[in-house]
View: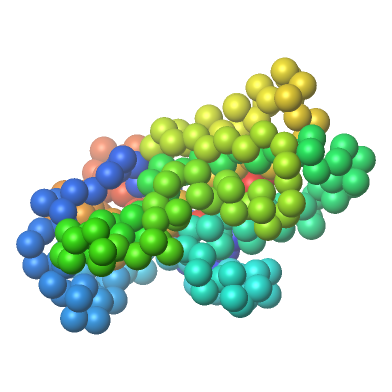
Length: 238
């Protein structure tokens, strides 16, 4: 089950472990402070936004998550919750598993390459610009990598093992493998497993400065004439 919406081009999520302010450049924080920039304005000259970006549109968060909680929740956590709800709703085994095994025996294993990068950098920038008192305590809980798996567990009331795997592009694959280990070791009787990552202005600007975004045409990662990769976003849970 995947959080998705609108017309979009699918592509792998990029694998930077972190992006430094040096990589973002001196001008980017100032531009952000003046009201932000549309993502396509951050692309190098000649890049086609329809080819380069795989950004999720409306993915049903307003119907799936209470408005009060959604306002305080990062976009990445919303991805994970919607995908988890879809996985339980669309799977014939999902809801019966909760009733049969009990919520104490159902776990969550979520992989993420970057976590909620937008929230993390926003918190860091507040601290760097205004000191400790300027950094919002409401943002801090969402800067840790395991925030999304915790949000899924709290939203669904799951009390079993809760793990987060952070291994860049391999995060989702390793999350599924870790979920299989939990089942094999009888630490859990059922597990929601998958991955999530988000695409934002900070990450896109960093990739553009690295020169790894495709200029035009299709994304062909294994082709001799490949030009780069297409960063994407979303969530998928099994």
